[in-house]
Structures are given as C-alpha cells and as structure tokens.
Length: 204
Image (cartoon, rainbow, N blue to C red; front, side):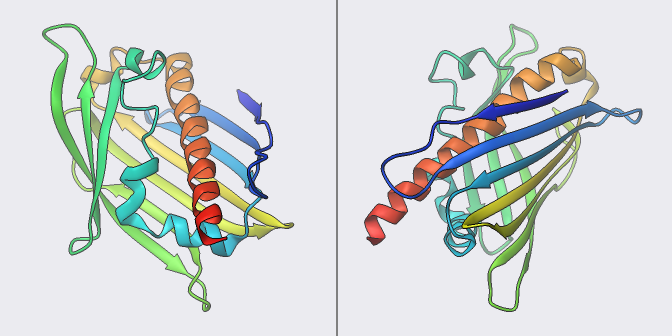
C-alpha cells in the first residue's frame, strides 16, 4: 500500500517538506520492508551537515515517539532515547515494550552499527544502520538512507528492513506495522524539518 502524505509548507524559513511516499510490504522470509522517498526544501549541503551531526540526533529524532503524547503512548515499542558512541561508530537505542504483564518490560537497549559513504566534497551520500546482534525484540534490522540534490532542495530515499522475534511477531501484522512505522517515518521527517528550520534561523 502506498501512502502519500502531504505536509503543510513551513513559513518560518525557506525549508519545506513537500511529500512523503511510503510503501511497506511483508516478504516471504518474514521481513517488513518499507521504502520511502522524501523531498525536502533544504540544500543537500545543509541536510548532510544535520544528518552527520550524530551526537545531536537525540535532540530531535525521537520527539513525539517517546510515549509522552496520545499517539506514541499506544505503540508497542516506546522509543525513549538514542545515543551515539563515536569510538565504536554505534548508535544505541533505548526503548520500552508497551505490553501488559508478563510481556511488557522497560529499559531495553539495541545497538546499530553505523556506516557512511561520502562524496569527494565530503557530503553524505549514504547512511546505513545495521543491527549489531539479535535482541529480545529483533532478529534482524537495517536502515538505509540515500541523500541527493533534487531541484532547489534535496531528496532522501530511505529503506527499512525489519525482522521481529517470534514474540513480537505475535502482536504484529502488516496493517499494524504500517500504522506504527509509517507514522514514525512521518514524525521523524517532521522532526528533521523542524530541526533544520531551527539550525537555519540560528545560522542566519
């Protein structure tokens, strides 16, 4: 199913999120695969700077995903925080499992190995986050992002491949996954745009 989510243009600066197109499928080998294309009215150079400022992801990426609002508090996975460990080139995601006893639990962590490819000018071309090892909730996961100039702004092509543990798979089906993950993609892009606006206004 393709979702085309149109956003309002931001009037605080020249930054604007135009549209997000997301397609999510469930494969024969039990992966949920989401493909997304996002056009953002911000130069690729500016977005590259934001996307490679890994230490500051925790300031914007999970806003509205941490269970403190009416939407995200109903999700199975509550994303509490994210931290970057530069010495290891690893992101650590802190989360809770929002299920009734005995399945629910708090204070879990999962680690993702960061890989990046840059152009000769130093701009980010591709970011990938790969699950370091199996966890209580995940058998496998990978998140991949490609950034390219597009018109007067930039285009981000994102792919997510997720394979849950048997326990989490009991509580998921394709429509529920779409409701949870597609909404989170939308929210993270909104967070990115808001943060980009803030950075642009500080620079100006």
